[in-house]
Length: 165
Image (spheres, rainbow, N blue to C red):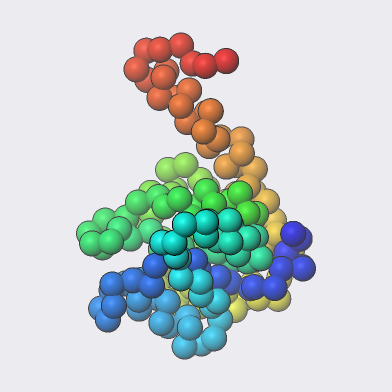
C-alpha cells in the first residue's frame, strides 16, 4: 500500500516491555503520552501472525527497539525484516547491530532517546514521500540481500559446502 494511503503514521507491534523502568516501556509510554504511536500488542495465540503482517503493511513508520529482554545488549529483531517486507520506514534504536546489515539514513532511521523518536515521528507525520522512499529502500535491501536462500547459501559457504542452486 502506498504510504500516502496508509492509515497509521507510526506503529509498534510487539511486547509492551518489562514494566516501569524498562527501556521499552519508557519509550512506548512516552510516545503514547504524546499520542503519536499506534500500539498492537503481539498475541501468543495461534493464527495471529497474518494479522500482525497486515498491521505492519498499514504503518508508514514501524517503531523497533533493539534491546534484548534483559536489556543487557541489543540484537537484530525479526521486526526489522518484517518491516522491510511490509515496506514500512523502520525507526530503530541507535547503536543497534542492524547497522551491520542495513544502512542507517538510507534503509532505516535511528533514534537515541524517546524524545528523538518523537521528534522524528512528528517530522515525518506529513511526509509520506520520505517514509515511502525509506520503506522502499529497506524492502529492496531485504529482498536483495537477506532472503532465506541468501542466508543459507552464506552459511553453506562458510562451512565449506557448495551453495544451493
